[in-house]
Length: 168
Image (tube, rainbow, N blue to C red):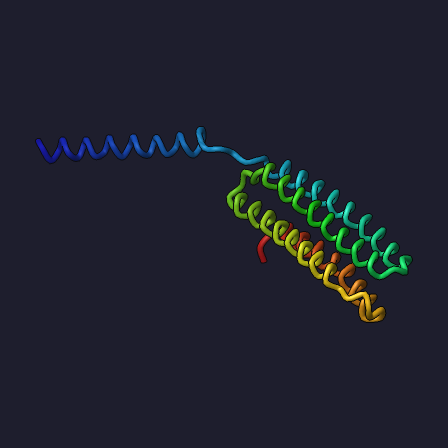
């Protein structure tokens, strides 16, 4: 009788544990967004971020070309990249607040996109530091360096778009 009672007790404990797991999985655990709502939100947020960056880049590029004072160009380019880092930090915060989609790999995907965005904000901060270190006393290398830094924005935006396409 004792082995039978142990078997019944073990079965009841396992059944209760499985039921508890099911309740957690389907009722109590936090759910992510509907995948289509998540995708629409992320795409809109990234599009708005990219459009703001494109506008800033166009202004910075034309201002750098028109400005003759190299020290002013250096300060403006540095400020431009600091601004882009701030905008990218804001996008990162928006993505974190949005949360993951309710899909099998939703949390991993959302984390991957958010990580890529945070990394690119760091790239903008690095570009700002580089801009601040440019030597305006040598006009030709200075102008080439400014153009190279400004062109790097396209690469950074491409990395974020790549992260949106998912792993692979």
